[in-house]
Structure formats: structure tokens, C-alpha cells
Amino acid sequence: MKVKDFSSIFIGPLYNQRVVLNKIDESIYDEILDLSDRFLIPSQVLNNLLYDKKVPNPLVEGLKNQSYISNLKNLINQKELLKIAKIFNESGIDYVFLKGSAINLLGDNFTRYSRDIDILVDKKCLSKSYELLKKIGYKYLNPLVSDSSKYIKYVHHLPPLSNSNGGIVEIHHRITELSSYEKCPLTRLILDKYAIVKKDGMEIKVPKLNHLIAHITYHAVLHHKYDFGPVFLHDIKHLKKMIKNKKELIKLLSKMNLSDEYKKIEVYIDTRNIVDIFGIYEKSNTKKSLKKNPKRISKLILTNSGRSDFCKIITRKFTVNEDYYQTSKYSIKFYFILLIELKNHIFKSAET
Image 1 (spheres, rainbow, N blue to C red):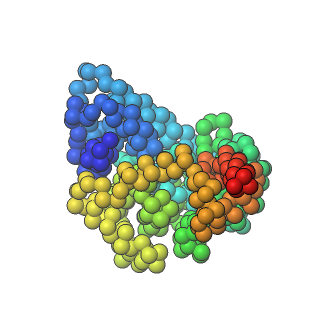
Image 2: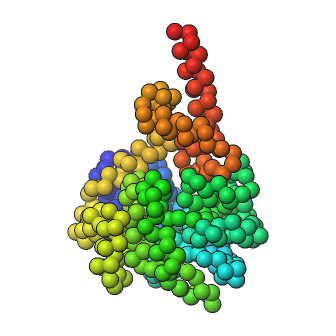
Image 3: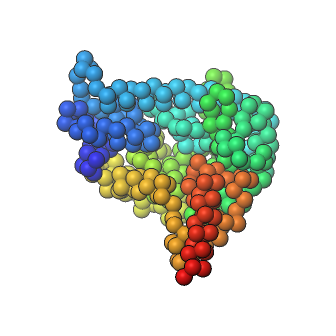
């Protein structure tokens, strides 16, 4: 897929700049479906296509199927969110729902697809929150993770938990990664100054609007480095219409060294320019390639950054509390790859 095709198909929906289906090369249909699924925007892509509904088309059918699954997942998430809010409210857990869950609760006429439910809890409530979720049928998605919530030194959330209904939950004890901020600038703000949304008679805690936008900006810019697709653009476009105190938002983003990036995003949305200035296509595909091809042992041993990563990886207890669905370099599979390559490297060194 060319970057021009990517921009028109995946960024065009942001501005309702519709694409004629007949002008899309059939050879990139599979790539479009792969990206729309990864980016969680099948409905936006589908609704932006101009096509004859009477003529069957594999791309249209694929997008319809993805949208159906995404809608079903959203219904599951809504049901699970209410169950979790109820048990957390009753148990006095200091919590706030994050990202997609919060966006869906705050606005009408906008559906934010998400694969899981992200919840921030006070670190003091982490163990209790984990036990409460276990009581309603949740357990770690990765069967190799131990039944514990205490191994959090290097991570900002527990590994994903899932239940038999298809719900997936991540419990965060801080918003940002340690590699981004030693002291998280958002965690206490979000926990202490939350908003309450009422749904089906239930009081549900979500972030204040400015805090939610700051989190989304951080998540796109620093956490994912623009490799998670254009969904953040849709989120910010939707939420910025509701901003009441932009000065406070910019002040917060300035403290996080993100004000320039946010202004760049805002200008991009307002100018209706579908050129991929954030390199979303290239970075998304680079990330996918890196997951398939982890760093080789020579890279890890022969560079300072590599040696540092290697020591961290080797000394970590992978079977204790690591979520290998998040990144290949901390996976069980990658751990064994490292050991095998290290053994091969030692033998080759001995032979020479």
C-alpha cells in the first residue's frame, strides 16, 4: 500500500473525504483489513467508502464483519464495565475508567471501539481490585502468569485479565510508563479529580475531560510513538469540541512536555489535511515487523543499550507476572530465543 492510499483510506474518514471503492486496488484489500482491525476503525473506513451496495465486494464484506465483531465487543465491554463499577463502588475501591471506556461514557453519537477495559486504581487498592475481579470470574489471560498482583516494579499495569464472557480488563496503578516519567504527572490528578457519569442507575468514575485528553495525547505520542493508528485523531477531534478550559489543558500538557505535540495534532485536525504527517503507516508497520523479528543477540551484546536491555530481560521472572501479549521482548517465547541464541553465540565464539 502506498502512503497516499493509506492517507485517503484511513485518515480521510476524519474529514469525511470519501473514497470511491472502484479506485482502490484489490491487491491491497488484505492490508486494508489488517490495518482497520489493528487500528480499531473498521466502521469509519466502511462508512467513508462510496460503492454500489448491490455488488458484492470482499473488502466491504470484511469491513462489515469487523464492524459487527467490534460492536459485539463494545456491548460486552459495556456489560462488564457496569459489573466492575458496581463491585468497586460497593467495596470502596478508588478507581477511574480510562481511554475508550471513558470516551464512550462521556459523549453521544460517537462510538470508540476498544479491545479491553482500562481501569486506574489507587496503588493501595491494587491487590483488593485484583481479588474482586477474580470473584466475578476474571483470571490472567496468559496462563503462565502467577496468581498474584504484587510484581509491579517494572510495569504500570497488571497483565490483562479475561473472563468467559469475552471481557478483557487491564488494571493500572499508574497512567504513564516509568520510562516516560519517573513520577507520573496524571495518576493522582485522575484519581483525585474524577467526573461521575450515571448509566443504568450506576455511578461510574471517569477522568475529567482535560485529563482524558492529556492521557490520550501521551498514549499516542510517547507510549505508542504514533504506531497505534489514527484512532487518537478521532478521539481528540470528538473530545476537543467539549473543552471548556483550554488554558488549563495546555498548562497540564506543558508540564508533561506535550503541549507542542497536542497543538500540532489540533492544527492537523482543523486544517483537514489528510497527508500522513505523523508517519502512522510507516511506524505501525515497523512495529509489526519488530514484533516478528526481535533483536538478535549480536545487537543485544555489542551495543550499550542492547546490553542494558539484555540484562533486564534475562533477569526478569517471565513466568511470574509478564504480559507477553504486549511486547515480544518480554515474552516467554523471546526469552527462550535469547537463551538459544546466547548458547549459539557462545559456541561460535569458542570455535573461533
